Image (cartoon, rainbow, N blue to C red; front, top):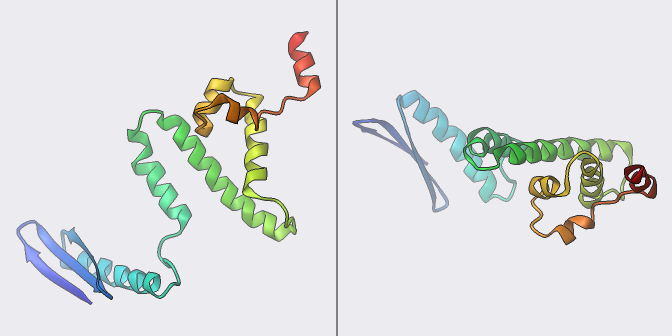
Length: 153
C-alpha cells in the first residue's frame, strides 16, 4: 500500500508490501504516485517469486555502467567489461536459437580472453578481466605454436 506525505522539499512516497518498505522523494505528487504504483507492482512480483518485471539484469548493468563506472578508477576497463557482458547476454539468446546446447559462459569467456590476448599485453588483459594472479590468467591465454613462432621471427 502506498502512502504520500508532503514535505518542505517535495513529496515522499512510501510503499509497503508484506512487511517490506521502500520510500523515495519526488518534486511532484504525480511523480510520487507513478513511482509508487510501479514500485508496488514490482515488490509484489518479487515477493511472489516471479522476479522483477520492471528491471532486467541488462537494465541494471546499463545504469551501473552509466552512473557508477565513470566515477571509479579504471573506469575504462570496467565499462568495456560491462559492454562485453551485455554482448554475452545477446549471444546467449543467439546460442539458444542456434541450437548450441553445450556452450557455457565459461566457454565464451575463454574464447573472448583468448582473442583479447592477441591484442593486449598480459598486465592490461589481467586488469581488464579482473585477474589478480597472472597464473590464473594463463589458463585462458592460449597462444598457438604459429603465434609464438611469428613472435620469434
